[in-house]
Amino acid sequence: MRTELALKKRFADDFKIGAAVNPLTIVSQQELLTHHFNSITAENEMKFISVHPQEEVYTFEAADELARFARSNGMAMRGHTLVWHNQTPDWLFEDRQGQPVDQAELLKRLRSHIQTVVGRYKQDIYAWDVVNEVIADEGGELLRPSRWLDIAGPDFIGKAFEYAHEADPEALLFYNDYNESDPLKRDKIYALVKSLRERGVPIHGIGLQAHWNLYDPVLDDIRAAIEKYASLGLQLQLTELDMSVFRFEDRREGLTVPEPGMLERQAERYEAVFKLLKEYRDVISSVTFWGAADDYTWLDGFPVPGRKNWPFLFDERHRPKPAFDRIQTLS
Ligand code: G3I
Image (tube, rainbow, N blue to C red; front, side, top):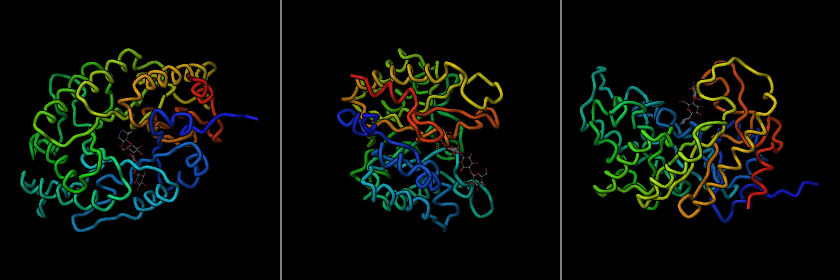
């Protein structure tokens, strides 16, 4: 008989263990989720376009269902996300004639959205990804071009945190981004958050999305990112961890099963990563996977249409993979 511990028990002295979920997976993966995880994040259901598709219309059914799932299973819940360049409806940026609104109007709409959404989940959500992915990936520009930036200038970032704090003074407020361990982007994220801190903006943490693969980023870059962010005196969370079996540049078409060696390499990678994370358990308060088991991952079809991926600790039938076994025996 296997004697392994549930993940949430295995890491009980270190950090919360979370999974991104949706209305389908809370059913199809229910047993796995409730056994191993003590935190959830809605994969899409709390994004702007999902909860507020039109100015006068809020749609909370799916988000409420996920919040109920967390509550009834005694799980913590992270909120994702209030400000993003993606999955945001056009109406937010436009007047009734389709012309761009001005800064004051956009901020007014943002405040009202945040008051409603953060206010609604006050009892359920302990941490929000307030602003997601505003840093430019490449080049010298700090911020990614977006309609937010065009209309409101950089002010929308600090304002979003202020509005979220106003709506729920108890919630932990995070800046969340990907490629967070890349040295160039790491330094930009650091610069943004440092300037927010210096201006007294209520921000409590940085979310490292951690969409990683079998090779990248190298461990030294992950360590350097953790150290640099932690030097700001904030808490850190891994918010969207997965370990693709393909390098990002690898555009090969589909395999139907993992190649020999892939799952062993993935196990070594997960072991090294969790060993590192445990070293920083004083600053890392939660590790959330962007899914739970290989039967469902956003990486299926990304970036190569139709291609399957196997990024998690559990296989398509929810059985532990070599990576799960490896992190069980970590000291
Ligand atoms: O809702 C429509 C549905 O009406 C339609 O029938 C269907 C047809 O394709 O599409 C549905 O929308 C999809 C949506 O997920 C909900 O399932 C979108 O096409 C699809 O693009 C969208 O993908 C999500 C993606 O964010 C959007 O950028 C992924 O599920 C979600 O895992 C992913 O999550 C992001 C994080 O929020 C931020 N960090 C990166 C991470 C991975 O991309």
